[in-house]
Length: 296
Image 1 (tube, rainbow, N blue to C red):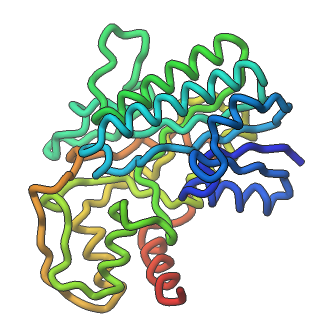
Image 2: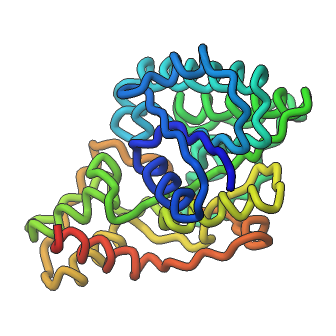
Image 3: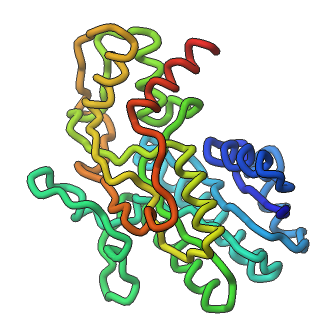
């Protein structure tokens, strides 16, 4: 049995990590930025912890990233820096830092004609130019990874993971998967898709995000480690999957003026598969999401 801290315990990732760890019999303390102020916890706590899963984040979705860069950047930078400062004093047995696929250089993600799966060593801090990441959120995740490296250099045990497009039945409509679920449930016609629909993402179910992360912890993997499937599915294809599962055939309306992100973001899963293989297909994830929405 471990004593575990989960930051962002009320958020999408945090809820699932908390549930999985409690089910495994561990003692879990969940803290949040809002209800139980994470900054107060980091300032006062000096307990010995077996594991810290730091998945708290301020508005990590496309609209906020593009339209509220200062809030997203400053809030997340302060949160990460405070966590690392606390960890340096407390020295948990292991920390998990959630980076992001947004940290990868955007010039590797904008060519549909020659798509390539992103590998962990596409980010190299020993190079003068690590490449331009995706918006301010990508920059702050690069900074978080540098802090993780500094923490490791001082003897701290840390696992860095880079999740791709995580999704699940209970994800909010701030994210494409949750928004598509809700539109399909309402049987909207036209069915709205932001961007031109060709944006390709690597969709990884939250159960597999949790499973891969905990497997990496058990194996003492430092990372960085992609949390991904290696399979790319476009926004238009995902929308069509939802509509087919919901049993209707709407007209699709593509809003090219809305935030859409990079063209092709798919991960290389080779390192992840050394410790864990994803189990939930996207088709199964869509079925689960609509079934859960119907039962709600």
